[in-house]
Length: 374
Ligand SMILES: [Zn+2]
Ligand SMILES: [Zn+2]
Image (tube, protein in one colour):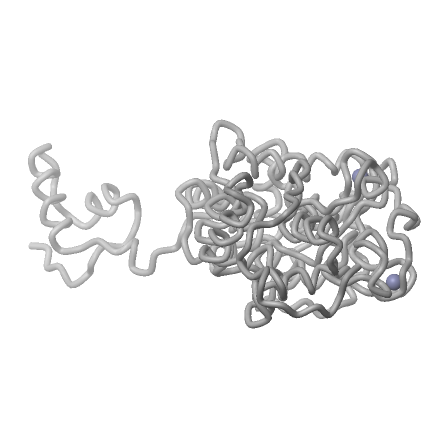
């Protein structure tokens, strides 16, 4: 591959070869294949077509950070034949998060993962789904995804090439063929838990998930997933969940100090994430019974269930309230005005407006005792 060539002549010029994106292909994967097709090293290709000054824009999670301006530039360079925005993770904005993914890229995004069998099939490429924290297994090949080279344990960097020769299906650090990575198969007792991934993937493409009779926007549900992750792992509320087979896979995570001020999924490995997301989705099976058992058995209050949510969706507020009602300070106090009206009501019924009758009318709660009954 051609490397270390510096020339201003190609900057912002149309690509000579425009690879067609594969199904669910990630922007960085497509761009790297475009560079290979031009016989350039990906980093050299970026320097030549976008300018050395802009090369920094292609580092640090470019799939979540690519700016609107750069997306428009690239679309022009490919004669508007390809929707570049759809290749980036920003296409999940409004679905996975209510706001643009560019504003909160660490939420539910992870290091790039891969399935050795998928890389082996046809021409290797990397998928959108492999950047999502809850995509922990390949449903097609029934194996765990991987995010490190099995030989040297280095995370993937698909813009780099081992010895400037080997493509992104080889580790850029040691040259190991990632297609030959030993597969970590999923034990049969955990296979039913793959439904969790299917539900969330389906949610990504429809924008919502269905819980009982409720249609819930995926981003509202994912906020709740974040809250439940903290309750389970950093606050250690394990009752009801501890008998589920997936709980065994969290053994390693139990020994870690889980910080609640950092995304929980970034503190776990792939198998632990598989267990955590599976357990959280299990809480929404037999809806709303499992969720209710979890709240009651861990003695969780409305405050526990909602404290870290910036916005509480109506669906979740209703669900939690039905199990553990919100406590409103002074909410059980009766005002002078209410007592006055209640006395009129009692008198209209021919009853005495005394303390005993008022207490009965207010449902045995204490009313405002400064009110002077005469
Ligand atoms: Zn696969
Ligand atoms: Zn390696």
